Figure 1 (cartoon, helix red, strand yellow):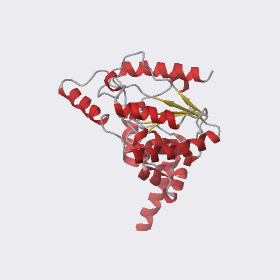
Figure 2: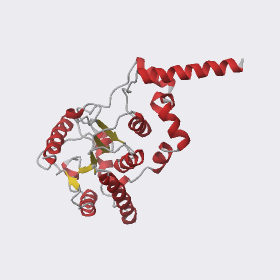
Figure 3: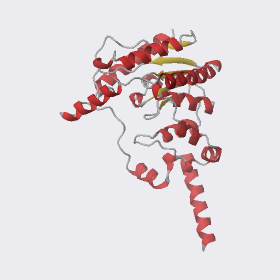
Figure 4: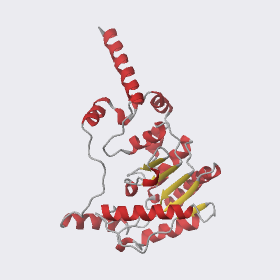
Length: 277
């Protein structure tokens, strides 16, 4: 009886893996950091263009590159540093990396990186997609039959006190000073990782996602911006100028509303094309 159950389980496991190879399906719901990371690692594609950052760029599609050559490695809680490390360790190095600067201060998500590249987990997942987080059996088929909501930008600000509460939380976040020792350690490790990428021919472009006008020159944000530019002043790094001519609106002080997101998406695409000239 036990032997029969094991055999049936192995057959189902094999059949599910074959199904995933033949009919791969992206989830219609928000990816967790581990799901997004695994999607990048095990997709079977080497992307020419990658954006790395936080939830601020979670909705990026780069309309001109909505194909197999582009990947949005946005890791909401982790931020761009973890994305850079994942690219380096995977050796799936793009021709161009656009790195969001807003949350570089979050540094590296060490547990995520360690879990992702742990050999007893990493290698089996590369051969058996059923082991990947996004392909867990029951959640997968629930999503397959009834896709969840896509992570679309909000059209309007939250009403009343909710917006005030979220806005105040962002204001508090940007009023906190960075720990100089921790910040310098992050910058040094990031530079080491980016030097590795540029040595492999990757063009690195730093860019900033606009916030509410009130936070544009917040002390913490200004300090990060200036120290980043001073630390990465080598000519091999490119900087996309921030958009200071247009007004942007958010739902909490930092996450752009739909109209503003489309506005920034157009600005980003224009500046990206200018940098290539």
